[in-house]
Image 1 (cartoon, rainbow, N blue to C red):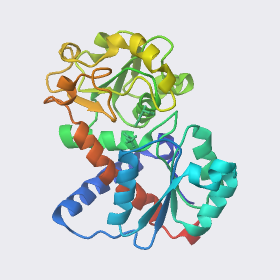
Image 2 (image 1 turned 30 degrees about the horizontal axis):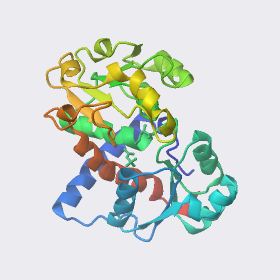
Image 3 (image 1 turned 180 degrees about the horizontal axis):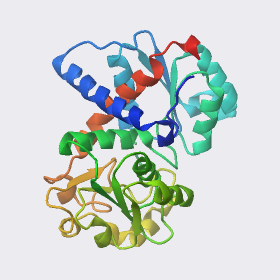
Image 4 (image 1 turned 180 degrees about the vertical axis):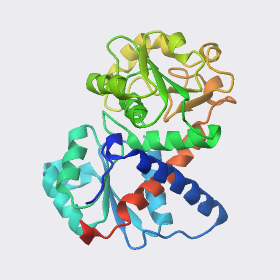
Length: 309
Ligand code: CP
Ligand code: NVA
């Protein structure tokens, strides 16, 4: 059976562990200049319906370092943009390639692509989720803190794709998750309900960022207006004002807190320059680790022979 990464639920706890262990090795191999062409001759198709810097670069460079290659497909320049169905696109890409990474709006597009493709499909961000980001962030936490078990992670801001992916991760792994979101901007209700029911260490949603951040080991934020919400930017800037991660708010977190942001950041909105450039920030490690962690994901999903299904 081929394996996809459409949601965090596609991974068992052991898969998380294998990805983190392999990411560590791959990061070391790269540092030492040790060749690791485990995907020689393989091709990844990358469909982008939204902008990207990190995701595109890390997947493209990652495939190259693994001995394969990546093809960038902008939907506007392909027949997808002219209405060719997801199912047909999936079937055709399966005849040429060994894997697909897609960044798009609807989660259903990724799920359908995975359904009709014979090759692994990786979610490179939807309106609902961003699994590759959260896997890389967990790896960064392991690097910094040794382990994530029992850590308190406070997500402050919009209940968007990043918040939803943290909720799914908290169901699979023993992390304590608190969120603070303004009314009307909470995470996806079904994912939150499931998360609250199933997360071992608990998930708590607050209105007040101070309550959520109290003694947190990790403070995480993201933009207030995600891709596709640009028109709401100004309105959201007003609504989210008191959710900014600044030095004053950070005083409430634990002493050794690490500050995370998936980037790109809107400095002066969801986070101040002082904090994002400050001693607690690990945002550049997060961005770098996208490369190592996604290489591990690509290997694990794409190493198998296509003919094995
Ligand atoms: N964090 C992230 O996914 O960045 P890009 O939008 O630049 O890919
Ligand atoms: N929530 C952001 C994440 C960008 C990586 C967005 O969807 O635009």
